[in-house]
Amino acid sequence: MIHVQPFSRLGRFTNDWLNARHHFSFGSYHDPRRMGVGGLRVWNDDEIAPGTGFDPHPHRDMEIITYVRDGAITHRDNLGNEGRTEAGDIQVMHAGTGIVHAEYNLERTPTRLFQIWIMPNRQGVAPGWGTKRFPRQGAGLALLASGRESDKTADALPLHADAALYAGTLKAGETVRYALGAGRVAYLVPASGRVTVNEVAAGTRDGVAVAGEPFVDLVADEEAEIVLVDVAE
Image 1 (cartoon, rainbow, N blue to C red):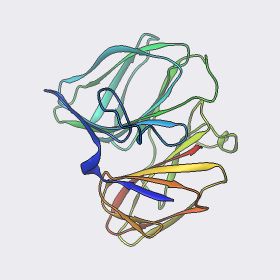
Image 2: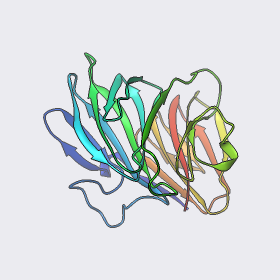
Image 3: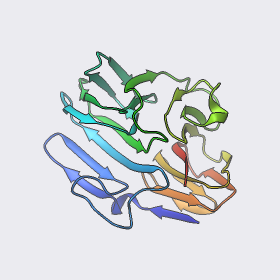
Image 4: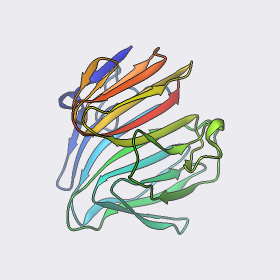
């Protein structure tokens, strides 16, 4: 099954500093048909105005990944963590038993990012946060974060979830085959560019759910930046 959710049909929230699109039900946007894919519960497409951001607020028992597409985001939390994550890199926050954090765009230009929430595979873990820079060279999709047993030795940020996040930029005409194991689903978004997924077309910032397929075959119809989450059903 391949299902494409066009960007034009995503949920929407806009105020004087935030322009957000919601792939799944979130906040004031609720669609009973859009409640997530497997353990993936939130995929927000946010644009944050310069000098603004999310003031301190709490979370618990959730794995939260921020993939920065343009600009940078500065994180602060009640554990004393503080750091800046630039475009192309990610940060991972383990909400666990509880964390209070803020996310600010301290840049002179808008920051654009994907905010991805995944259900943890166990409750009550110690809260934490980390960020990491990844090389942008190389073909295909790179593993950036994972909680799968098979990835424990990989150079990726850890997750307390049976899930993995991949990203990469494909050149026009480049193809990638990603093996999707039994009992797993994938959700991917072209941050830029157009792609074909198992012979189904998807445009910039569309969401593509893949289930019941042994492989995800990606073809870049033009240069495309891809973000993909592999998660247990």
